[in-house]
Each structure stands twice: as structure tokens, then as C-alpha cells.
Length: 176
Image 1 (cartoon, rainbow, N blue to C red):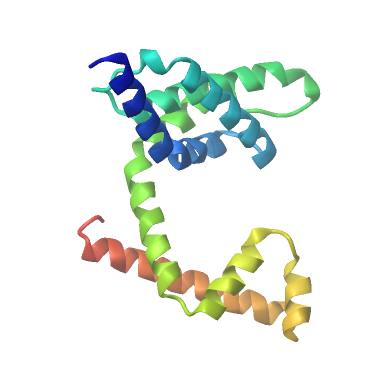
Image 2 (cartoon, rainbow, N blue to C red; image 1 turned 120 degrees about the vertical axis):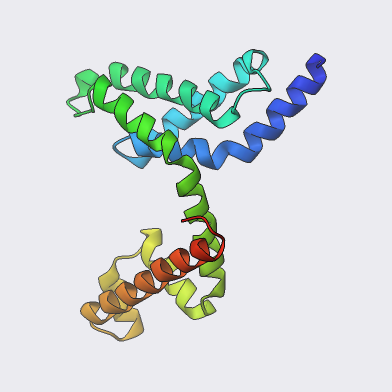
């Protein structure tokens, strides 16, 4: 494979896998801001080392290996700031488990997308608003003219319906 083809393949696989790599990083980091930083560092490292990628290897596993290295680097650099991080052994165990569950989690994520699309627009928008983190449940409930506990019960029912829909979708596809 010539370098131009190898580069094109790298770009295609990187673009297709960004969400999965980011999800992996989020699993290993204590907060989103740190995860964003590590993901950016990982992306830069991947772009710098694209020539080292073997097209016959699983791209996500290769990229997550680089991400794991970036997470460990981040932990070492920030160890003196009073933050508590996982030990290298525990971090490695979590990382390995996350990689092993990758296909299962991806199938569940795809099923969730389908199930969210099946919800009525109003319910989907309510879920998005409540879980976007911009407004508190108390604020949203007040705007809807409901007590917060009623909104919590509504969210509980919607989560349960999504959980059941995901499992049914996966059962139908033979992925359980």
C-alpha cells in the first residue's frame, strides 16, 4: 500500500472511530474536562504517528492503546495537584475491560439511538434537556409546572422504557 493510500485509510478509520476513542478516554478519566484534554492529546499523537498504524490491525485497539498512554501521562503530570487517580494497575484493568466490552457497548449505543428516534419528539426533547446538564431538574420541573418528584418519576419511566427497548432491539438482532 502506498503512503497516500495508507494515509487515506488512517483518516477514514480515525474519523469513523473518534466517538469510540473518546468514550474509552471518558471511561478512564475522573471528569469531562480532563477527558477532553486527554482526547485532544491522543488525537494529536495519533495524527503524528499515522505512518506507524498497520492497516491489518484493529484501529480502535491501536488508538485506545495510544489513549491509555496519554491517560497515564496526564495522571503523572497532574499527580501533584491533589487529585486522586486510579493506580496504574487499576487503570490498566479498567482499560482492558473497556476494550473487551467495546462491541457490546457499541451495539447498545446503536440500539439506544434507534430507541430514542422511536420516542415521541416531546419525550426525547425532555430527556435531552434533563441530561444536557444546563438546567437543574428543579428548574425544568418549575417551567413544566410540575413538582420535581413528578419529573423524576417521568424520567425513571422513560429510562426504563429505553432500557427495555434496547434489550428488545438487541434480542431481535440476536446480539444478546
